[in-house]
Image 1: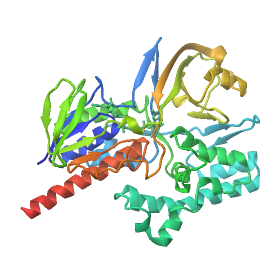
Image 2 (image 1 turned 90 degrees about the horizontal axis):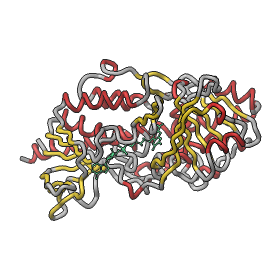
Image 3 (image 1 turned 30 degrees about the vertical axis):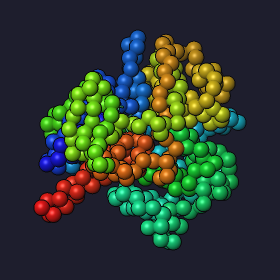
Image 4 (image 1 turned 180 degrees about the vertical axis):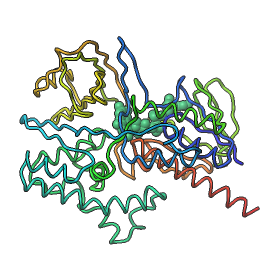
Amino acid sequence: MARVVVIGGGFGGMAAAARLAKLGHRVRLFERTEQLGGAVRKVEQDGFSWDIGPTAMTLPAAIRDTFRKSGRPLEQVRDLVPVETPRWHVFQDGSAIDLPIQSRSGQRAELEQTLGKSAADAWELTIDQLGPTWELLRAQALEQPYKGIRALGVKGARTLAPWRNLAELKLPDERLRAVLEHHLIVTGTDPRTAPAYLAVHAYVERTFGLWTCEGGLTGLVDAFVRRLAERKVDVRLGAPVAKITSKNRTITGVVLEDGREITADLVVAADGTADLRTGDVRLTCIGVDRQAPVLPHETVVHGDPLVVVRAPQSQRAWTILCYGEGDPLDLLADRGIDIRPYVLTRRDLQTPQYGPPWSWRTLTPNRDPHTHGLFHVGGTTRPGPGLPYVMLGAALVAEDIGKAQRQQAQAN
Ligand SMILES: Cc1cc2nc3c(=O)[nH]c(=O)nc-3n(C[C@H](O)[C@H](O)[C@H](O)COP(=O)(O)OP(=O)(O)OC[C@H]3O[C@@H](n4cnc5c(N)ncnc54)[C@H](O)[C@@H]3O)c2cc1C
């Protein structure tokens, strides 16, 4: 049994802690703030309550696997519900698309009607082409640590990158490109230089859908809190870690900000390593009255800046993410969506970018190459930002640590 310290109680840290405790390790988790969940959290004002981080996630299997591999399955603890409403894309010329999420035929029908048959054909072909890319990524980078492009061979490299980069992809309508690229902008990635495989997100959403919980994803935080208690993880809140310590390039533990030294055999850093963040994004929380128009789960207003309105489960507590300058409500009004008359309360915040630029080169590897016994999990590490990927990264680390222990036992 190893003594494990997990730094940070976001989804990455909680998933790693629960899995490692289930593998029989003695796990202590130190969280800087007074609550678990990290980016998944709520703020409240004037009777409104907003999820100011993630509101939905794709790949529901990632969270189900986390719970199954750490105790009782998620279905017995909490229900996931699909996001049924399409994503509304509004363009600078005033046109709009109601693009269904988990439906190939639904996407074709909507695109045929709004942009025409050749655009619908091109979209379908492009997203279908990303199917093999997804299968390759799943097998080579999500279910095992990615070993680099050379390990894929010539055929694998071609499958990974159907186009050299996204800029090379030919689409008959610039609005399709905007739809494909918006996810990159919100993850802090420049679409002009983004590797082609990042478009796989559109395939993943079309295939696996978007999922949330009744009342928002913070419901999953409660489920994690209970799971950590069941697995006897020693959780310390309000306990920032100041330093990771090592000797001869081998982990010895951590030092808390209050000066206490904690000895550990293994450290999992899941602190959302700030130095990789690309900066903050403006987030405006608004509470609207009952006369406000009904918006789908997400409205993406294209242009510069990109503005995303999230109205989870048609509640009246909306969040607006603005990726550039200007007042988001005025920007929306300029683009034909004037919700200013319906606003009852408003709160402006800064939030960290959804993730760092998404590429294997910029993301920290899960096993630290310099210090033995140090691992990295979370949105700034491999396989990337977003809740499912963060939990898949935790699974890779748990698997890696499990293996190391077995090898040690065999060697003894
Ligand atoms: C506004 C916004 C919207 C998003 N929307 C979505 C979405 O819809 N769907 C989706 O899948 N993903 C979304 N994401 C991305 C997703 O939230 C992140 O990828 C994921 O939450 C990262 O989890 P994490 O555990 O790596 O980091 P975090 O959630 O940031 O957790 C890190 C934790 O470490 C703690 N910590 C930091 N330093 C220390 C220290 N020194 N000592 C102790 N503790 C420390 C922090 O307090 C924090 O609790 C969104 C992100 C943002 C910011």
